[in-house]
Length: 392
Ligand code: 3PG
Image (tube, rainbow, N blue to C red; front, side, top):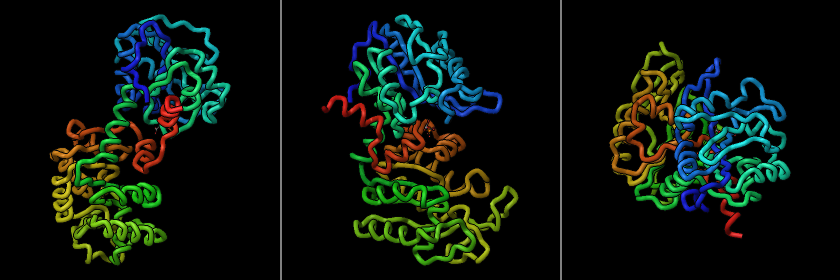
């Protein structure tokens, strides 16, 4: 794909599609601004080069045709202004133009998903948006798995279409880990359900040297290997799939290291009393809520010897201190490892923040669904649109 820093944008009208879909509290205060910070390099680059900059993003999943009180990007405009150290005016109605941006100035175009036709990638809408600019920049990696008018259609009609700095960094980091990894390549896939991660597990089972599974996913794998898991969360209907993944890995000489010891309780609650036991001692009413210390030490060793690490999902209920040990040990092992590591997904980001290892992870993706689909090996429509533009 064409990249923003390869273009001369001086005096040009630049339309940047960013992903500024950030969490807010009930009063509309932004509670986490990583995505806004991550959008700054592309915007600043264009401003420094003397471009007239328009930025837009979706926020939430609004009804098309109106901008409700929870839909507005107004708080984002304020935060952007603070980070850029200059005023950022919010433009409410912008699809048909009629607003002014001078070279060296930046405006924020109101929630693009409030426009009729955005989600369905309407061609007429995409053409109107394309007509606003000389250069279209897609920097919204977090929305790259959506084919919408501002992420997909516009790339066909804008005079020039390119990837922004964040988009470029995400593609490079994720691509390096998945397509050209230093071995051993170790993936950690945790979380509660095999069903929501089945495609990723299958896709990774074909590539990685070790596949560490955690949480409810690990329980389903334990069932597949003939263990009793009491009342632990698992999906019995997917036991065969789990078995097939383990067989596939074994055939390649790769492995799925399953827990030898676990932390159990009879309920998931802050007051629950945790017991560390061997995986063979799990009783009929036990719930497995974390891996035990022996397993943690083994996983830490695998991580220490890795060449590349891909991390999505915790191995225990790390929100509760008595079940956080496994995820904490893993986070610390990743932080200390020499390996190139990438991490992504909501729970994973929360674990990274909780255990203060953000500076020690090789690359933290801003994508949730987009990160997962990239790991699944899917073609992300927004990236495909940029590629198609220049390969015919
Ligand atoms: C995200 O938060 O994962 C992205 O901003 C995409 O949002 P969406 O799932 O509403 O398309």
